[in-house]
Image (cartoon, rainbow, N blue to C red):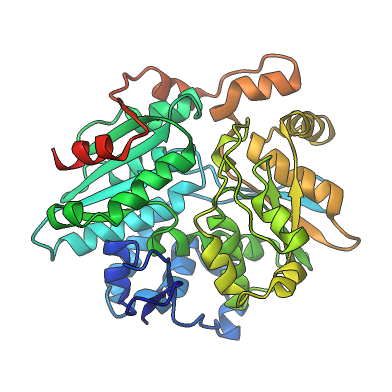
Length: 428
C-alpha cells in the first residue's frame, strides 16, 4: 500500500518512507491510498484475539510491503504488552482505560509501535534518525520512554514552559542519553510550529534525517485505532456503541473514525473538547477557524490548530454534512471540568483525569436511549493530582507510581520561541 499527501502535491510513498520522513514535502499529512475493509470473520473471532494479534491483523494491511509478517508480529507483541480494560461506571457508561502502559497515558500505544518500526528500519540505514516531537502533555513522556536507548535514533522533545504537569515534565526530562527535552517559552502551537518549520528547512534536512513522533506520523496515528477494536471486543453484546473522545490534536478521534471505516460497527462519536473548541465550532457553522491556544487544566487538549484536521477532512471527503452525521461536538470550560470530576466520583466512586472527565460528561449529557457509551480515559488521574484534589475538595493518596518519576532530576534545556535558536540547537 502507498501513502499519499493530503495536499496531493507530492508523490505517494511506501509505509517505510512515510514513517521515516514523517511529513510530505508539500506540508500535508500522509494518508493510506485506500481504507481496507476487514473480513467478517475478523469480527467473529475478535473476542478471543489478543491486543498484539489485533494489532498484527489490522496493521499488516499497511506494512506488509516493508515489514515481514514475522517481524511485524514481534513488533506488535513487544509494543502492545499491557492491558486496555473497560470499567463499567453505571448501566450504560463505560471507561476505556488507556493508561496501563509504562508512562500511564494512551500515547504509549502509538509511541511504542512507532519506536519499534523505526528501530526495525534503522537496521538498514547508514545514518541516524533524529526524532522531533512537540508535546502538550503526555506525548513527550511516551515518546521518551519508547525511544530511550533505541540504537540509531536521537529524540528532541519540545514542550511549553509551565503548561505541562510536574509529573509529565519529569517523564520527558529525566531519561537523558538519546532523549533531549527543550522547554520552550510559548504554547504548544508554538512548539508544533517550530517542529514543522524544521521539517521544511532544506539546510537542516541536508544534515539530519528528520522524523516525527507526533500523531502526524502515520506509524503513531494508525495504532490508535486498535483500542477501538479492543473496546468492541470487550463489549460486543452492548450495541449500539458511542465513543466519547477527549480531543486536542484529533489523532484519537480520527483513528476511531478510521476503525469505523475499516468495518468496526461504531454508532457515532462525540468530540469532547476543553475551551480549545475549534472542531465543535466547526461542526456548528462549517467554518474552520483556529484561535490562539487557551491554557486549561486538561492541558493535553490545549491545541488551537489541530494537526490532524487534514485527516479529519480526508475521512469524510471534505463533506461537512457527513462529518456532522457521525460526530457531535461538546465543550467544557475549567470550572465545568472540575464539576465533572467531582460528579463522576460521587456518582460512580471513580476518579477520572481532567480529559476523561470531559468525555464522561459528554456522555452524561448526550447519550441517547438504548445507546452504550464508552469514554476514553486517556491518562491516570495521578498525573494531575493537584487538579483532582481541587475538584474533590479533599486530599487523596498519591499513587505509588508517581514517586519514581518525581524523585528524578531533570535535564531540560530552556529555549526561546525563536526558530533560529531552535535551528542552532539542532545543527550544533
